[in-house]
Length: 263
Image 1 (cartoon, rainbow, N blue to C red):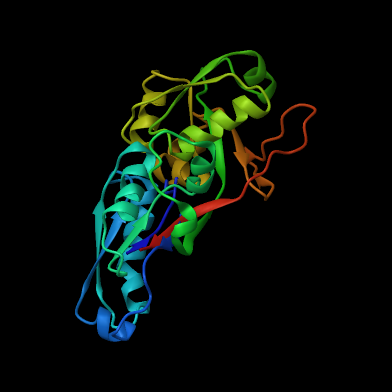
Image 2: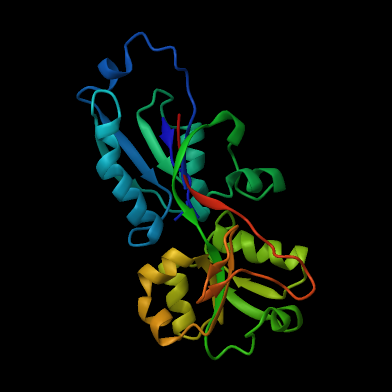
């Protein structure tokens, strides 16, 4: 089975390609895949950036696999893509007939002992990633938290999805490493729903990817409705999303992507 992790979209997330299984097939890969269907498991709900990228990959990846199999995308959201990753690792056939996409923070979640992890990333075969992500935290224009200095002093609420998603893990890491006071309100089904919660005033902000925000709500960026955002990337970010740099602390940078794997 093959698996693509994100965030995350994802998660998948969003993600790169991984997999597990015995490569000692009696058939050649072309003979095995000819006329076959491959399930492409997307660990996120429909409509988000992980879903969009996952379906884009599913549309084209079959042409690059020997035997040119049909690739069928299937959404399996839950627990920040852990439901899909756990299914790929523990249940799906280990013959290369399944591809998945899940959170790019899977190895970190496993290392930290995050609740719900029932997989071993070292036993997955990582195939690649679909995108290089700039991860960010943004605040709504009415939030009293408008700077990193504010976030260190004032508690603010962020909408969250599952415990294994980049939506949750980056604010948690910031809280533990530099002392921000982000409070996660969990339980939203996906990043789209979590961002709508910001617009409705249920929370003050959200952690997602710069790409996801621009795709889902370009008007927010254009009209400056999300008044402040901080990015986490090896690059210098963008004018609208400067690289995260807390006061008196060197730049906190990460590099992530949407990953995939197979079993």
